[in-house]
Length: 372
Image 1 (cartoon, rainbow, N blue to C red):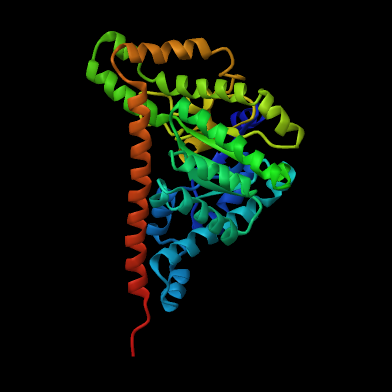
Image 2: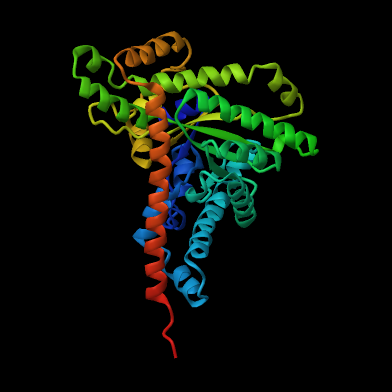
């Protein structure tokens, strides 16, 4: 079952699970995936926590305790989510130790309502790092315009970061710049750069979903022939940018100070269109020093019938540029698509967070001790 996942790992792709719940932790399922399916990290987001906590599995006692203490709903959510992340980090600690801190990581996201507030994002990142209190945590910060200076500041404090919601090549370059600036700050402060890690989560499937919809709207044979190509082209050109930045003179100075490269992470790798192979965004995005964070269905599909044939990014850059240009030639604006996806991404996470607030508040009220 795991031959394809083993090959993927051997090609330099770290396999992370894009899901977490208390049941997954307490049942031994997460430990099993680490042991048997080559999983070496976990990512979470507001939507994942909303689904996990709303299902109620394993959270009743903690919710009852929180209700008895009459905590605010925001505090309750922070206590619940950081407890899950802490426990998952402990399960992954042997991987963290074995890989010198590169993998064995668990990501937790700042409150998505702070996505456009730099100072609040920095404060929240510091609070989350303190609350979880595990060296193998990554604090997720969105790659909004307000998020960029927050990334620099948080990295500069020595906190490891997962930059999320990256859709455009221009924004990805700005993210790498923010990361390098953060390392330079950390170096000035005398911090140990070898202990600071980061990944840049470049979203994949949503690009195809939006561009394919527009190609269908055009409806010509030429338009239809471009379906399912833009997301891979975009991600592959992101890897080209990564190679360029991390072979620069600026990077060389940090490399001498034992800094770690910020790895590209392929996010949103579950295939949305049933017409495409369900392992498309795994098989076709294989390159060294990358991460692929997969929903469980994608992980299972890759284990069962993934086709890992070596590096599938090298040598694709000219073709990728041509495919993006062909989409633009049909009147579909790349800049418009990626900005829309960023805006929608923030809105979706904020909506999930608000749903989580409502459902948790209802549970706290239900479990509150009777007055009198």
